Length: 315
Image (cartoon, rainbow, N blue to C red; front, side, top):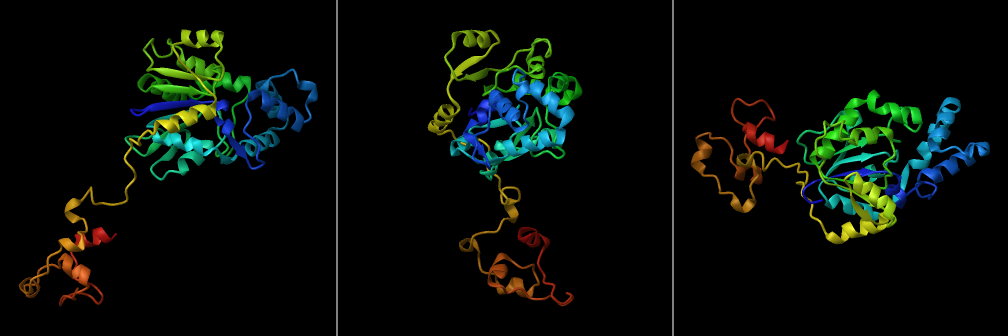
């Protein structure tokens, strides 16, 4: 986590966040129950989330997407999430449509979230965290969520650049899969060794809630290392590690870029000699600090004899 990590998060990651109604963000089965109640679909209780979504997208798409936006717009969250920013996060890949990460990253001026579906991957930007919402996001306009079986299955071929980003990152940077059951067809295809010409992945971990031997054996067979924890427990663990921020903080000063033109401290300034004044030499820093800037003979009214590098510093 100090040298660089990807986070691949699913519904189980966002359980410590709430919407404006103070309801915790739901996982798949809970969301299905809420959709059935909200849209009066009691006769469809045997269907899963993707099947319910298929029906609603074809009959009540606008109302369905509006419901999802209200349900997954985050208004408060566990402050432990902010401990993640002490790690060196290279990218966030998510199947969630919520805006939790926008709140987390906004709490720290050293970083910003770069949505690659809008602006493409960042390039050598140490303050950027690349963000790829595989199923859409409540911040997108127009809304275009991916919940149906057909859309999920077709997403790999319909937007290959998005999936190329995923395959490239898991090959180059270690990844933690958190709160995600690894069932999407697109994700499975992008992680399959044949998709990347049988090249090696970097180390990858998956967070499981229960110490279930069958699940552990399954994910170990896929090359995962196992973490057993609830979301809150893992956040507490990361906070307790007291990781350091390895990305340089943002700076709006030009001192490092143009040290020869940086504004000196008052104690470092020498008094200007009277000879340099009468010789018409350019103003020095003592003239700036004392305000003794005089018009030269050919100046326009209000224009002072200040070299261009002084102007640059004040801009």
